[in-house]
Structure formats: structure tokens, C-alpha cells
Length: 142
Image (tube, rainbow, N blue to C red; front, side):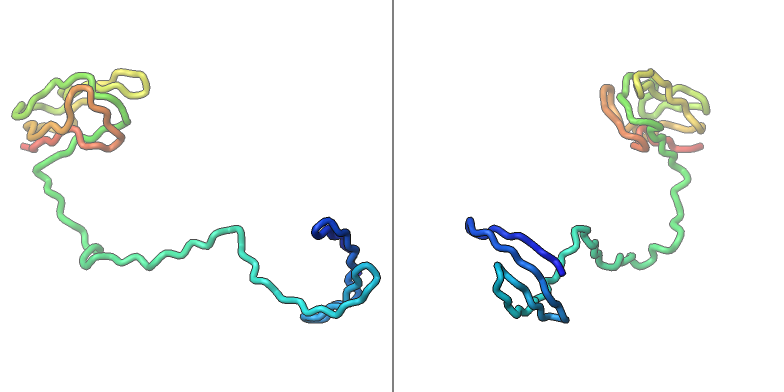
């Protein structure tokens, strides 16, 4: 059937499988025939199987939450560095006013106000590094 060559502790062996049924095989090792019993080893898959517990959702997480509409969050459109602030807390601004200047992708960009309002809180300082969607400024809407 099949022939194999083994070297065990410096000794060479020629093994031929003569007959195989279920868990028993007749093999010939260097001219001597042996009846052997085969033990199947559980093979371990090289691909890991991910097992995660079921996700538990908190009570009421399926309900739509009312958002505080009196505060507007100005978010960073891209990751970058804050170069200049044009407003301070308490300033009244109109739609289109410059809020700050930041550097993103080696370009200086001005961030303009999308709504009318009053600057409630400035969440960044000069030189800060921000990521995309970080809160920059909170505006109280009129």
C-alpha cells in the first residue's frame, strides 16, 4: 500500500503498510510484520474558532433617546492640530463665522459655524491634536 522511511535515534527503518481496517493495520518494518492498533488523535484546527458570549443589551436601549437640542457640538471633520482659535466662551456667533483654524493633511483649514448661537464651551486648546469626530466647541443655540 504505502511505504515510508524513518530514522529513529540514528537507526533507519523501512515501513510498509500492508493492510488497514478501522483501527487495526498490518505493517512490515524491515521485513518483520506487526499487527498494530491505530489511535486517532484529535486534530487541532489551525484556524481559531471565536467564541463570544451573547451580547446583553441594557433595558431600554432599543428606545430612541431625546437629544438636547439646545446645544450643538462642533466636531472635528478630520484628524489634525489646532492652530488658532477665533472665538472665546460667551461669544455670540452667526452661521458662517470662523471658529478655529486647524491643520489636517498638511493643509490649514478654517472651521466655520454651521448655526447661530453662543459659545458655551471650548473643548480644545492651541496646539492640541484631535481625531476625527472629537468635540471641539459646544454652542448654545438661540
